[in-house]
Structures are given as structure tokens and as C-alpha cells.
Image 1 (cartoon, one colour):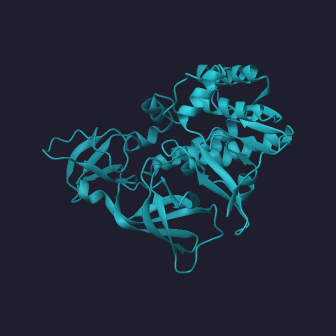
Image 2: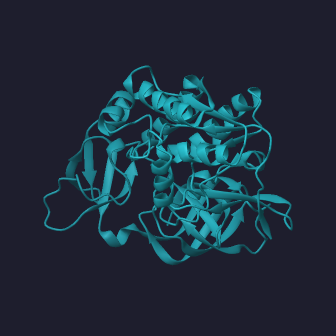
Image 3: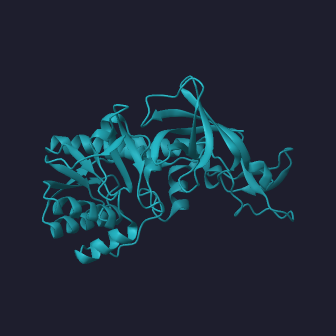
Length: 357
């Protein structure tokens, strides 16, 4: 049985981005009488995009009457998030930088700094829940109560030690309830819109790729499965498995990206049916709420990207890797994305997709 964590009495740091979710997370802990420290990580180069969220977080902390500090983490963020993100695109893969940020930055470098400042736990505005399974003797990660906002997918990389230090005050709330709480408290962020891009990319996605990935935005051929050229692409970094729009192929039927050949700088296209795969292999596996898989494998429901519905599958360990076999073929499984397995509402394990077939 998984028990919800009781709120600790020692100091709790809250990772504050200036947005409504982290602001309300801090407010809830303050309302409980906890000793709360607002902490904001500075990971972006100096400029308006760096200063604005820091100022917003500081304003929220001031409104709540809590101490606020800014922690500069630009170098470690560039090394552990931005550079792997760029390497993945150069290899023709589609990365998920939020997974790496949560594992290495928020619950890595930021938690370490928070503990140096006297905080024993780090709370964030994620829609997820953490508890302890007495039978398994392990910390468990569970989905948030708001299925539409659940963020357990991007937290699957957390270790047992990180989960033991994690707090998710919004885990039992809906987004509507969070915004209403922020409105009632007159928090500065209550009407602030949500960002849909990675924080370091912003809205100018193409400009970011052109600046950081000059070797992956070279034009090249678009070919069909037979190797016949049917068009030209802008650069492999602008494409992902399953993409249809932007191919500019005048051939009277829908074409989809079915593979990316980074070595030859080619995009391979095919029909929609070619996007279906029943199996995948994932590496860099993290057994979140489990110690491992039984010899014969185990049944779960798995997501192959954050917005995908969870689909029934069987997971089997193959050395350090894990293979998933789905009962029904899945569409557009992209290497570089993560596959995350769920046992009802518990995150069992997850890893980075290496191949699908």
C-alpha cells in the first residue's frame, strides 16, 4: 500500500518560476504553517527572458511573505540539458529536455543548493504525487489527480533519494482549482499564461535551432523508402517521426516522416501505415517505483510521449535495456523521446526510446 507523505516540519524550498503553479504550491505550504524558502534557478543567459521570470518569482514570494533567493545554474544547465538536447537533434532524435532538467537540475543541482541553505525538501508546482510503499520499501511516484495536467511522465527519471526529498503540493488539485486559489490570494501570477516551449528555447524555436545547431540545419534530400528523392528539407533538426506538415512534397498523397538518417542528412518519408510499431527498446532505464522486472516480464500501460494515451504492453528486461511489446501498434514512436510505464496510477519505470519496430 502506498501512503501519502505527511508534511514535514523542517524547512521546505519551493522552486519558483514566477508562474501560477509554483506560486500556489508555495502558498499552500505557507498556509500549512511550513517554513518555506522560495528558490529560483537562473539558467538562461542575461536578458529579458532571464530577468522576467526571476522578477515574477520574487513578486510572488513577496506577496506570500517568504524569503526568496536566486541560484545561478547556467553552466550546469548548459552542460546537462542544452548540450544533450543539441546532441540528440544532431543524431536525428527527438529529445525531451524537461526530463533531464527535472532529474539533473531541479532535483539535482537546485536541491543540493537548497539543502546548503537549510532546506531538507524541495517542492515544485508539478501535477504529480509522491508516497512511500511500505510493502516494497520504496518511494513511489504517482499521477496527478488532474489527468489533463498530469506531469508524472517528465518526472520518471527521479531516483529514490530524490523522491524522498520531493514535495508536490498540487498533486491532488486540478488546474482550475489552482488558478482559483491564486485569484483568491491575489497572487501576481494568477492570470499568467503557460509556456508551451522548453524554457531555454522560447517561442522562436527555429531561431534557437539555427543558432545552436548549425550542423543540423543544413538542407538535404527527402527520399522515399526506395531512395528516390521526392523533395528537399531545411535541416534534420526541424523534423520528427510522424511529421506531415512542412514537407512541401507535391505528389498528390499524404507523406509522413518515417525515419531520419542523420549520417546522410536525409529525411525518409512514407505512408501513414509505416508509422505503426508494436515494439520498442528503451535504454537509460530508471526503475522508479519498482526494484526491477520479473524474469518473465510484467504488464503495464505505457506512454510513448507525454501527450500520448497510455497503451497496454508487456515490459521485459534485456540486460540494461527494456523492451516493450504493445497489444496494438503505436503511432510515430520517436527515438529520443521517453517511454514511461504505469501500474494503474503508479509510475513503474521509464527510459529513453532507442528504436521501434
